Image (cartoon, rainbow, N blue to C red; front, side):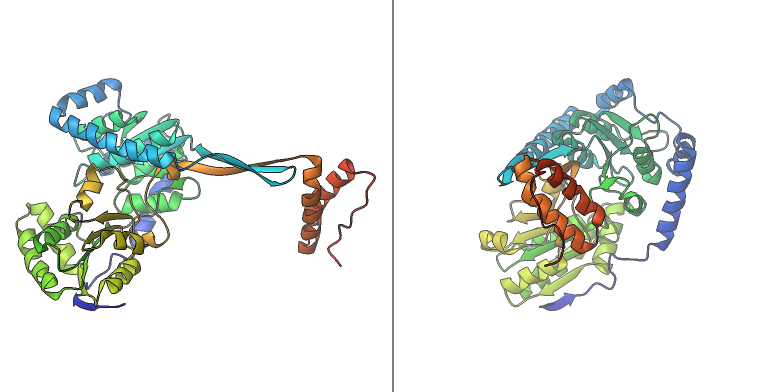
Length: 435
């Protein structure tokens, strides 16, 4: 790893999750066996909630009435931007067919999954934007049934703004249930809901573990860990802006890593001076999270130049990658491992988190090295088909028979043999694997 650590994290976001894993395994098994009643029991235990599970139209309308008009306008603005970006993504996926050889045509179809489950966190923070990101994208992809699931608060239920956002964005049903029990209810098709084909959305370690365990039975957007962010900054960057952006992401949680990579020592030192001051100025809960994240997980790395900075960023493969440096086009072309890229001071991770359009459900913990974030593509199956004339099938059948026999798969070979014999009864074929 190139560069000098001016601040090295004593901890990493990867931790032993054995206790979480065992707890989630038990809850999933009990809910699958016990159905609705067991899920309700866990809701009463963990959510302290005994109210309506599947929200009625009247409840949704009552929630909307509690949302200030200014916030409604902001939700509509964010929804329109996310929808516009998702629609543009959808245009990049197309059905096609191609003639492989004369008489053999193959093709591709993009088919949306039937039912999608969108988890919207609502514990420490009411993640209005997560409802917008997950539900809108599923709707644009063409899912026939979308359920939005969010944890209710005792005596209150789901935050009204989350209900309103999920409804505006196209959720067919809204479920007041959090944690593992909410994920299980969607995956197992409880409370009269269809079993979902895809689970999406962020959540705590229990939600993430439930999705991981259910993967295979259902699709998931990704296995997510704590959110993380990296800023690439040179001498032209404003240290106050850089420091503010680091603190803004550190407030997500006590174990949310933030990293600064720079080739300018004075900038790094000034940012390191400013961050604790900005953290001290946050409200109590936010301050506790940001202080712990900065103390235990943050790093500041001094590099020799921009190529070393880019290489460092690619090695970290951050969820969010911000560039506050000269030559934005060079960075766009050079950088390869990130969930979402924010080029220039004029945009920031919070814009992407809330309202700018590209999705905020992104790969964490280095997963950006092999996958991207939530998109219409995650809600779609890319399937293939083929059709052949008898003449077109002939060379394929001959090759198939010989390859299958070489592999020792005689049954496969005979499915080719029978077609050659039926279609070309007067001809002789050499279908052995030898010679």
